[in-house]
Length: 359
Ligand code: NAD
Ligand code: GLY
Image 1 (cartoon, rainbow, N blue to C red):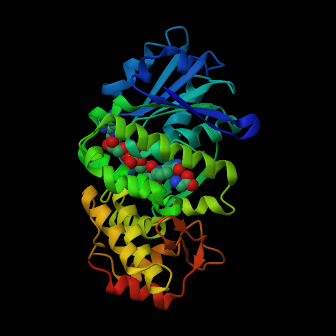
Image 2 (image 1 turned 135 degrees about the horizontal axis):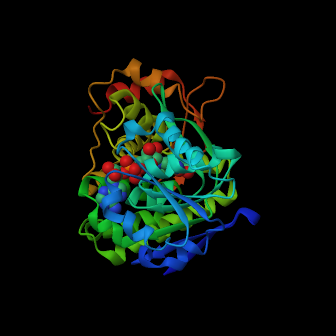
């Protein structure tokens, strides 16, 4: 097992990464300081892993909340079901919430933990590749609104993140590939050697080689932890983690939550950001080609959805947390391994990219 640390002084926490970690009771119970525990999961993950977690908690008062599965259920209504359970069971402020699932469960569980009695402890047990390499680390929590993705939320750090690589055995290929989009992101924003490693090892990852997967998770979590420690509340460098996301969120919202998976939308969004970077004279042709080629080899779509008009796209992009005074700001690339901070984009360049990029 590897242990990384997200070093945030008194709010520091470990990220445990390894095989069979769900079966290790002490990793979990070592971070529980209460008798009352609520485990939040969904109807897909519960039959697979809930009992494995519950078997370590016989000594506690444990409640479970099993939510519907899907991005379209990442809503305040779903979070309210968690509050209903906590209040109906009269859980105190020292209770612990365990989020067992992908990024949707982790984001909602974390948000419920941030809000219930102004904050209770929570532990992330991410079960998708995407959640293991990105969403479970760093304390961004929240829900979607019909008018904008992730627009309601809070920064709230967990007490621990437990990453069991074996749970990925039950994850289907589409979800696995979507997770790889966020892995590729780390190479693109600040790590050319990692991007090159991915170019060499993408086939091994797609064949589910455990050594390659574990390396990719560790490397991604280390990068994410460093960025979060440098800029917890996204005043600067953390925004680079949003490469491709302004376009991607517009695709997710515009096409209806769940139509494109988050990672799928981010892959297309990153190709659009690469196109825009090239248009602005920052990124060379060869690098644009390498980026698109790696996403294609990963089995991710790189075409932008034909159903979204340029006007709709721009309208959707104008609802984004990076925007300032209503101006659209996007992360661009100067090279593979070098992202810019959020950059104001003139409508003309944005329209050219959206109109000319392949649909
Ligand atoms: P998800 O949570 O919807 O999970 C994907 C699917 O896999 C679901 O159907 C889920 O039930 C299923 N699943 C989960 N674990 C499984 C397993 N081990 N075996 C079989 N099936 C399993 O999606 P996701 O890709 O994990 O997360 C996407 C969400 O994460 C988006 O809402 C996105 O906004 C958010 N996100 C948040 C951050 C952050 O920093 N907080 C970062 C990136 C993404
Ligand atoms: N996934 C973006 C962030 O955590 O900042």
